[in-house]
Image (spheres, rainbow, N blue to C red):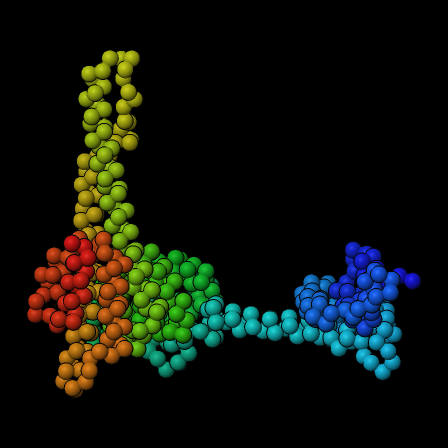
Length: 442
C-alpha cells in the first residue's frame, strides 16, 4: 500500500488545490513514516497550518471558472471528501467541507465588483451624480434658449448655429438693463457653458470634444477677463463635487487659449472661492497655470534664439562663400531656412508680450496673497486675537511654495515686486517671506 506521502508526490500535474488540501488533512490525521521502518512521528501542526493557508489562497484565486458555478462539486472533489471522511473517522466533518468554495469565490468577486463600481463613480464624471446643472431649475432666465441649445447640440449642429441660438438671449442679461460695449452678457455665458458641459459630462473625452468643437463660440464669449472668470465660475458650479474634472477642464481651456492665466489666478483668489481656498485641487490649478505660462515664455525665447542664430549663420556663410575657393565652399543656408528680419521682429514682439503677461501673473498672485494676509492680520489685531492660526501658517506656507517652485521666473521680477508690492511699509510677517527669498538668491 502506498503511503500518503508517496501518493501526494505521485499526483499528476493537473492536481487541483482542493485535492492537495484533502491530502494535507489526511497527512495531519495519520502518522508520518520517517523512513526508519519503525519510528513514527506526528506531522507538525505548524506545517499543516502553513500548507492550509497556502492552499486556501490558491483555492480562492487560482482555481478555474468551474468553481463559480452553483452546481454540485466535481466527482474528484467528492472522492477526496470521502477519503478525508474515512481518515478522520465517523462523526467528523472533512475540513474541505467547511469551505464553501463556490459561494466564497462568488462573494469575493461580487464585493470586488461593487467596490470597483463605487470607486468608478468617485473617479469618473457621471452626470447624474457629480455634475449639478442649473438646467434642472426650470424657472431660471434663459431656460427656453437652453432647451433649444440642448436639442441643437444633440442633432450635431455647427458652431454658427449655436451662435444664432444664443442671439435670442437679450443683451440686458440678468439685470434687465442694456449693456455697454465693454461689458459681457453673463446670462449668455451661463446658458452656453452649463448646457454644453452638462451634455459632455459623460467622460473627460466627451467634455474635451465638446470644448474643441465649439472653440470659436468660447473665444467669442470670452473676450474680456471678466467673461473668462464667468466661464470658470460656471465650471465650478457644474463640477464642484468633482475636483479632478475641474482641474482637467481648466487645463484644457488654458491650452486652447480660451481663458488667460491671469484670469485663472484672479478667479482662484476671488471671494466666491473662499471656501475652497485651503483645498489641494485649487493650488494644483494655480501651479499648472504658472507652469504653463513659464513654458510658453521659455518656448518663445528658445525659438527667438534659434532664429537669430540661423540669421547670423546665414549672413556669415554668405560672406565666407564669396571668399572661399570653389573646392572649399560649404553648402550655404537656403532662403527657406533663413528667417527674415521681419519674422525675427515679430518673434521679439511675441516674447515681449509673453514676458509682460508673465510679470502680470506674478503680480496678481503676490498681490492677492498680500491682501488676504493683511486682512487676516488686521482683523486679528482689531479683535485682539492671536494671528498665528492654522489658516495663517498654511497661507504663509503656500506663499513660500510659490516663491520656491518658480524661483527662476520670480527672480527676473524681484526688483519690480520689491518696488510695487513688498515695500517697507508692509507687515513684517509678510515682508520676511520675500526677504528670505531674496537672501536665498543672493
